[in-house]
Length: 194
Image 1: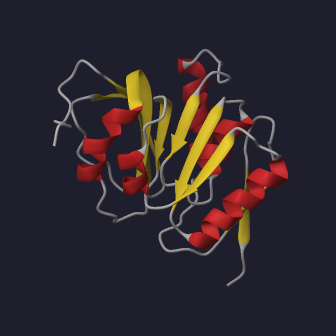
Image 2: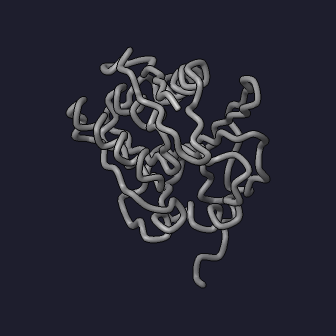
Image 3: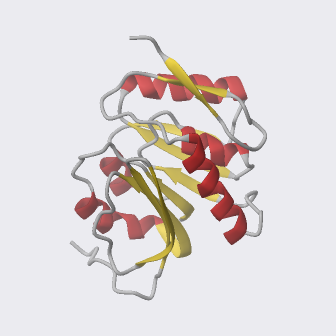
């Protein structure tokens, strides 16, 4: 099967091609969706990306994470399980000399359960369609968020959301629903003591 490419839509790396490898469940975020998301973020953050930390939990092609890096965020942590996709992510990071990008090969939920970093300002969730992820994810996610962290969700249909995710924006492009939420640390979160 012939590889195809998408392009970074904005920022320092604008127009840089991203190779789309063949991997199960890998589905790159459309250009229009990425452009809309980063317009939302620019508005919410007043155009200031330089001090933000981003977690791209189901990185796939890395389109979302590289868009964030292109706009000058301080740190991007990408997590991807498919070996071919991980190789492509590392190759692009190295070609761009994007030293603010870290790539972790592994299962998103396992990595999240071990992640004890400084909390992230933005978590990007674009899991494979039809994957069973929300319940476990909602238990683990609060540990990497701070008050006012943003969570982006891209899915075939919107999953049931916990009370601590406050909807900010949502839209649809073809079969894809996408939305942006703010973490409310004062809402009841899951019991993490177990």
